[in-house]
Image (cartoon, rainbow, N blue to C red; front, top):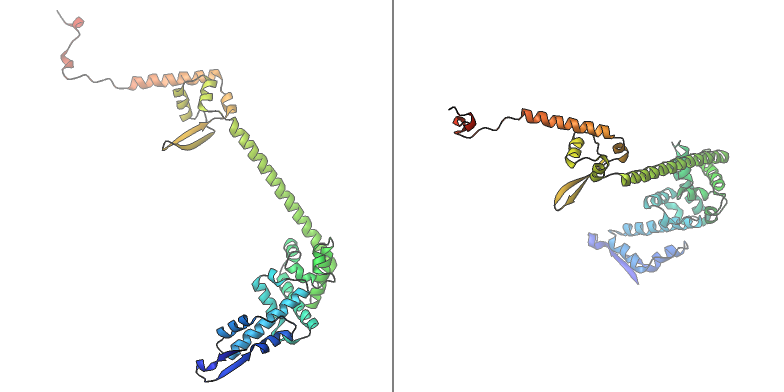
Length: 319
C-alpha cells in the first residue's frame, strides 16, 4: 500500500511514490513509534510538492526526537508553552535526529541552558531571579543539569541546593559563572524578602478586616431621624431646619427605590447627637422662633378687594 503524490497536477507531468513502510521505517530506525497511515496521508494531502512532504516528515521526526530527550530528562513537553518548546526544538538543531541517544540529550540540555542563561541576563532583583529559577519550567531545565532526578528533586527539602548545583554547571556550560554559594545566598535573601512582604500583606489585610468590622459595627449603631427627635425632644420641622443649616449633621445618606421613586434615608451618629445639651436645643429653638417673627414682619400686607377702600368701620363712621 502506497501514497501517491502527483506532481503532474502542478504541471511537470511527473509522479512521485512514497511507500508508507518507508516513512514508518524512518521513525522505527530512530526508535520512535511511527505515526498512523491516516496521519501520513494528511501530510501528503496538504503538501504541494515531494519536498514539502519530506519537510513535514523530518520536522515531525525532529519534534519527536526532542520530546523523547526531554522525557529522558524528566520534562514533559505537554507542560511547556508551545513557543518555549518550539524554541528548544530550534536550538537543538535539525541534525540531531541521526545522532546517538546520549548526544541528542546533551544537545537538548545545551538548548535548555541557553534559554536559562538568556532569561537570567540583565536580571538584578533577587526575588525575580529566585522565582524564575525555582518555578517550572526553568527549575526543571536547571535540575536536568544536577545529579538528582527531577521527580524526586521536586519532592525533596534539598531542592534549592540541587537547583544551585544545576545552575552552577549550566552557567559553566555557557561560559558564565554562577557559584553555588552565590545562588544559595541569593535564595536566602529572596526568601527573607518574600517572607517580609507576606507578613506586610497579611498585616494589611488584617487591619483592613478590623476597619471593615468597626465600620459595620458603627453603621449598626447609627440612629434614625425618629431616634434623634426622641433624644432631643424636637419636632420633625425643627429637625428638618437644623439638618438643612448643618447644626445636626447627617452621618450617612442612603438612597433607595420605593414605589418607583428615589427616596433617601438619613442616619445620625449617636455620639454627635449626645453632645447636644438641652440648653443648646432651647437656644436653637428661640433663634428659630425669632427668625420666624422677623420673617412675618417683613411679609407684605394682604391687599384689599375692589371697593373696600371706601368702606369704613361703622364704629368710626361720623355722625
